[in-house]
Length: 123
Image (cartoon, rainbow, N blue to C red):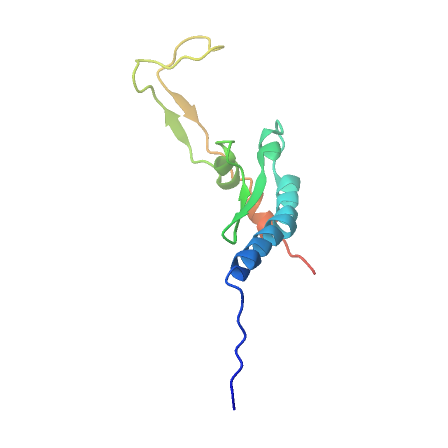
């Protein structure tokens, strides 16, 4: 019995991968992004407005690229002491006087990305 083979156009994989990326970003990414924006602490709104969802090579990323304190909000910060590196004291505009060090208390985590990701969803 002769075997008839089915040939698939090699460019099909590119089209399928593009469709998967689009679906992940436009459907799943938008849902997770919406939940993250609902859960994020909104002190100034800067972090909320910076949240994005993007998909490349079937990997979905939801988060902020341009707000450097995003991880500190999500995971919290330990107690820290800030000391000068190049000078004898620290000074910033609005400070009453130069100081030798600044003690910062620990900051509790305020997770918003993980709860958005692990939110139970029904089809």
